[in-house]
Image 1 (spheres, each protein chain N blue to C red):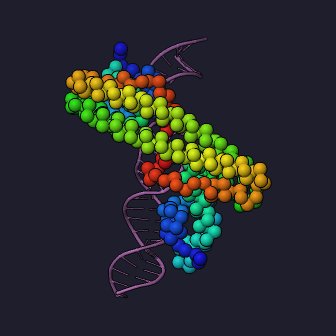
Image 2: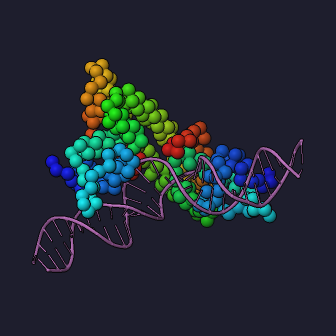
Image 3: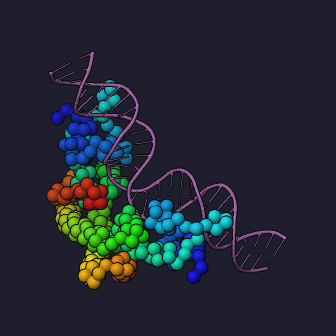
Length: 146
Length: 146
DNA sequence: CTTGACCTTACCCTCGGGGCAAGGTTCTAC
DNA sequence: GTAGAACCTTGCCCCGAGGGTAAGGTCAAG
């Protein structure tokens, strides 16, 4: 397999060209060779890395985390501990998110039922107490996403 | 309760001053009065709105959605339909996210078990095939999150 | 008078790219 | 040979919901 340009590499890896350029800029991919006219050239090795990145992204790892693993790997280091650590952290994070979402779902359902009741009784000043009276015990996590 | 400055209003509503200023700028709050020296002055009514915003945010509504509801409310319109619509949409979105997260959790668990096995067998080239061999059937949703 | 706590605006940063502009290159068809 | 399509390049601004910081104005207490 001879070197290919970014569009082809991206398509083969199931990514967008823009994403691939971003990964290079962020150091997840080694700086690609260029043709005389400046086109990036990607090798089969690069494709492997791209596939790896895609998989890791599917596991919800951040680009920084993926870079960590790739850097360790390139340094010939034992990445198992790092990888299992990452996976454990992510499992814990997922479980927190699941719990949050389930709480959120309950709160929404409560609000929804209140809305129905209010609607049957006539939609007065009660209107937006629907939300005002939703359960307050939802912790708005600082993490930004719930 | 006499008017208060942004820090106090924010603290009473459980928000940051910066968030409160943002809400004003985005039109969720009416433009606040100012002291001679330019400090914003918030009233008890503003506090009610801030509490409402906090609740709505806890239900995962976006600022735009919250603004919609508040605008309707200020216009004296029936907001019930809008609110129930929003809640229904969000319930559906939550359910999709829950399903996504559960799939992700399964994939992570699979990867985690593979990591354990690999570690017991010695951490060789297998190392990052942990992730490479994770289930690929996770749809990377275009929505950015998962 | 000074110190510290508050306030103001404004600008850059997040995360993972998407979209677009303006321009260069390469390939295909006629 | 040349037109056009289909690539590629860099660079900039955009998303959400603010956080961090700078540079400076204001207010109350000691």
